[in-house]
Image 1 (cartoon, rainbow, N blue to C red):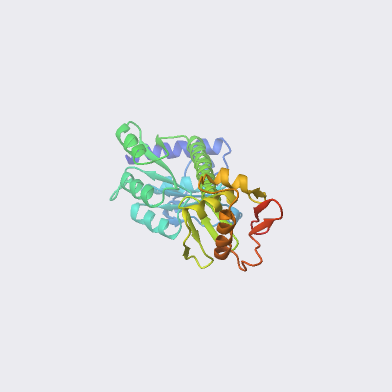
Image 2 (cartoon, helix red, strand yellow):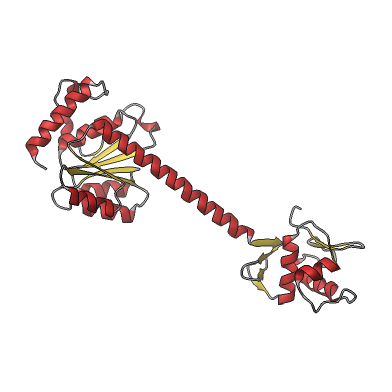
Length: 296
């Protein structure tokens, strides 16, 4: 970036911040920046209240005054701020702890901000990413957004606008992460609902397989699976022979023979701890059978 315009802009921003009562350092209120603050690299010194701050920001810019200004400004608005002068220092800081949001300058000596943004998006996709570009460099802005940047700000910019944009990015990320988490939980719940426990055994309805308590597969016939699946769909509901024949869709069964009883007996040998005293597939006198889930 051009040093002279940047310094003039920083001086103007500092003066404006002081007039607006933004709570910046006393040097800002005097319209200049304390050069001692521009020498810090890495983490900003902890101040009272930082321990409770959850949102962290990493500022990556080769201009010391801008790094210090952003660190001071964002720090006084409730953020924990770290700063890096180049991509190498940024990678080291991220290796120690990934931030919630990174503010990257596009034009830096050595590895530029676009290259760093590409790496950051691949390595830490959940980190918010705001690019700082020189006014008029539309190509950099387009490339930055295509690389996965969440927003950009052309220099010079209003500090309050940058703060507002960063907060907006964080809100969108939080909402997006909530949606992803909810979808993952729903998928896990759906998958779990496709596996039904029969005592110590587990029936996978999708794969049509029965597993024992040790995780080993237990051989079952197609007719036995159909019968278990029927019971799984009707927990704690007594089913008579007519219902079993109709819903299991096995036309070879006869209501007057003992084929249903034989299949239930065979299943009990596979899933019951004590087949002579069944606790999972129970007999309902003068009705039929009922599947009793664990704790049911």
